[in-house]
Amino acid sequence: MCPLRNPQMIKALSLQHILPIALITLICTSDRPSQALSQPKLFEGDRIVFAGDSITWLGINAKGTPGWILQFQNRAERSVAGLQVTGSGIPGNTSTDLLQRFSSTVLNVDPTVVVIWIGTNDIGKGIPTKETVENFYQLLRLALAKQSVREVILVSPECVGENKDGKNPLDPQLDQLAAIINQFATSGNSGKIYYCPMRAQWKTRESIVNPMGLTKGVLTIDGVHPNVMGNQFLGDVFSYEFGLPIVNNYSR
Image 1 (cartoon, one colour):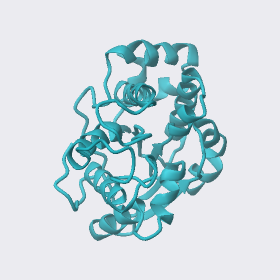
Image 2 (cartoon, rainbow, N blue to C red):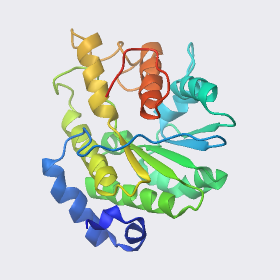
Image 3 (cartoon, rainbow, N blue to C red):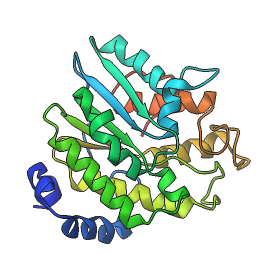
Image 4 (cartoon, rainbow, N blue to C red):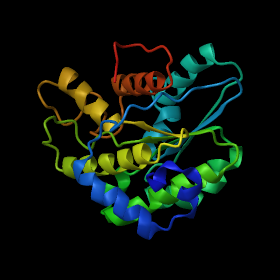
């Protein structure tokens, strides 16, 4: 059995075991799920925390449109009673920043579901891949160790630049990070860990709505942060991941 499939072993393994697993298997792993995973489920009284950076912050605080978290919350509350949805996003946060505040701003509310969407700023700020992988391991370890947590959803980065066909300068690094996150989620599938292939879904959507290959202004304001249409799409993606109604004809 792969050691990542046992949550108790995840807690006990050292990074010298985890890092080679994530990095060695990276070469044969894409952003799309490497195995069929059932969808995470929402139950009455669930407490969901979305943890991340400015994109997560905008999920609550977007101007001119309901942010994607609020759109997700609106749909979820129609289907699930007593749901609590929290956005814990801080602009500029890296995986290191999120790890430092994870216990005090994410796990402190005793969440039942934790969505971790971080890493774009790691690439933008030149943080070594090994450090990012270490941080993801620690975030996952902390989440699984929290007694209240039933499910953890790991999300791949969406974009830095909207141009298609790998023409954005940071596309290789984003693809690499997406594959690493995928490997963490799918290799560690204990029935508690799920994967949202946001990067693959974002690229597919861009190929449909951005045929001219513009670098911004289609789904984002500036090539990173979602605009009105981008917020709607993100709301659809997360709604779909949890089996909720969506606005567009979206499918994985």
